[in-house]
Image (cartoon, rainbow, N blue to C red; front, side, top):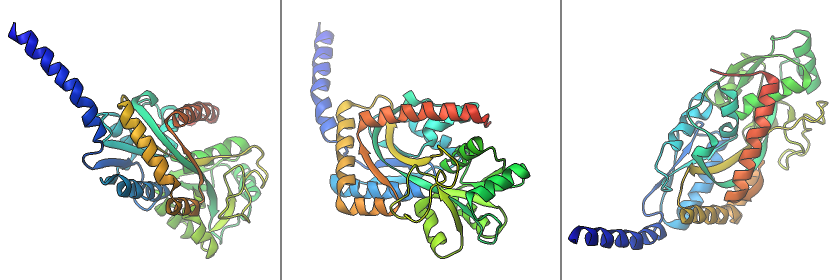
Length: 320
């Protein structure tokens, strides 16, 4: 008879201890995975928010860059981790795009717990100032007259850069040759060197080069002009009606995270994003701050998945 009593006592003790353990979260450093290289917009925004999180909770939120396969390496890694809140993902739209874009990915949206939607920002369509492309119209006309002669450098297969350009192709009828790079920095350098013709990159990364004349802006991709570049027209204003494509930033964890850990993270992220210094830094990247919680993030993620599934089907673009 001792064994059942011992089991009952142990189970009761575990039940009593579980909330206490959850209340101590985080009791050690938290790994935050970013799918793109250091120095890019996702890395900058992620480190800004996570540095403030570290200050608030007294534990380190350590950003780790796991690049490759359009974000799939990072997404798959986080999906397979223990759902205890000690491995998080700082994601851009690839997590909603890639299940439709790639022939096969080893994760699905249900493998994640959305925690917070930080905000969104436009990209900029950029050309070498020495190129003949001075407007979106010039580029579209050339892409129609001589299909597949425009060399477009993206920041990687499945990146916001890649898909924003593919939406432009689908809506305008132009054609181009896609050359994926490992990050936006190398793509930008090759545009300035004249080795490729155009790229699309987040506005914060683009503006220093536009301002000093090393790159020419043809238009920004948002539905309205960015506050950090109010003189730069949108691509829709430049003649491609209905065009809009932004990059966004979301924090997620593996599926099945404890509700109280989700609530703690949700509250601490919102608190971090609401601080004046973080707000200032995020707005300087051209971001429209959303600061949405877990439920809003989940609804947004599902809507983005549906939107991109339709766009990708219409474009016919599928990657191995």
